[in-house]
Amino acid sequence: EVQLVESGGGLVQPGGSLRLSCAVSGFTFSNLHMSWVRQAPGKGLERVATIGTGGTTRYGGSVNGRFIISRDNAKNTLHLTMNNLKPEDTAVYYCAKYRPNSWSYDYWGQGTQVTVSS
Image (cartoon, rainbow, N blue to C red; front, side, top):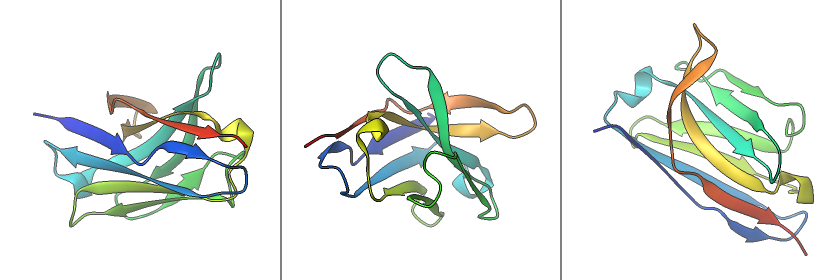
């Protein structure tokens, strides 16, 4: 059974940090391209960051320099370290399996809420 399970969300003050995790099962994780995607209230989906099988990373412009995507292939886990958080980072964050040949996602986690507020 394919599963992507996020954890680590919560409430944080502006300027604070959080680390999200996504446990992946049902795949050979090291063979997967993975992304973090978020959806803010009343807005569409936004790709936050992507990491390839070789560790190459790409970031959305709004988070570049503040967020770090990483992977632990030994533990089948994807991470997103978020620093200097801003109120506009408030969203539900999803991990997703990315298909680079079609620029699409075919498996999603259930999402974890991140709220940045004082």
